[in-house]
Amino acid sequence: MRIKIVAAVGCALLLATGCANGDSGSEDAGAEPSPTATLLPQELTKPATTVVDDEIKPSPAEDAPFAEQLEYELRRRTVKMAYAEGETTATCPGNLASAKSTKATCTTTFDGVEVEWAVTIGDNAAWSDNYVQYEATPNTGLLTRDGVARYLYGNNRDSIDYALCSNIPKAVAVPLDKDNKYRCEVVRKGQKPTGYSDNVWATESGPRSY
Image (cartoon, rainbow, N blue to C red; front, side):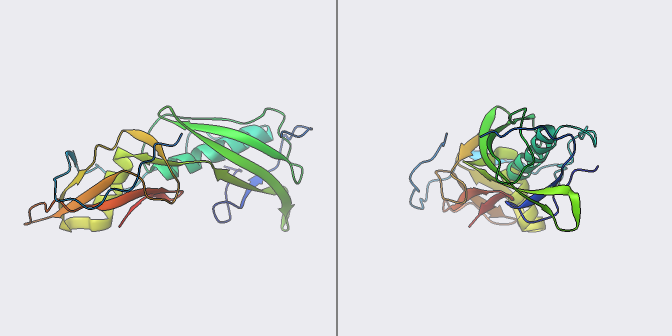
C-alpha cells in the first residue's frame, strides 16, 4: 500500500498522487456521576480477540485522487478510535488539493455515528515530494461497547472474570479525552462486584478507563 501514516496522530503523511487543483475550505455527554455502590446493569463478554485490524480493504490505488487517499486514512483512524469492527465511511471534498495550507472538513462514520475532522494540508515530506503532511482533528470522540470490552479484557489479561458497565451503546459519540456518563467495573476472578466503578472515555487510540 503506497498510502501510509508515518508520523504521530494529528500530523501525518500521505502519498500525494492524483491531486486535484483547488481549495476546499453530537456529543452524547453527561455530567460525571459520583461513584455509587449500585451494580451496573450491562455485562460485557470477553471478545474473541484483543486485536483490531485497521488495514481496511481494499486500499486506494496508488494513483487515486488525493481526497480518496485521505478518506481511507481517516477511516483507519476512526476504526482505531472505535477499537472495534464495524461499517465505516468517509467523505472529503472531491476537489481537495494537496497544496500547503489547504483546509477542509471531512466526515467519517462508524456504524452510523458521525465524526467530523478538521483537516489542514502541510508541507511535502523532506525526504520525498511524493508524500505530504496533514493534520486532522476530530470534533468528537467515539466509544463502542466492543471496544471497551476489548480494552478492559486486554488490559487486565487473565485476572478479569467479567466487566459491568452502564449500558454503553454499540457505538456512540462522546467528548474526546474527557469524562462522560459511561462507567465500568472490572470484576476480578474469585471476587464479587463492589458496585464502585471507573470512568470510561474515548481517545484517538481507543477507549481508556481509570
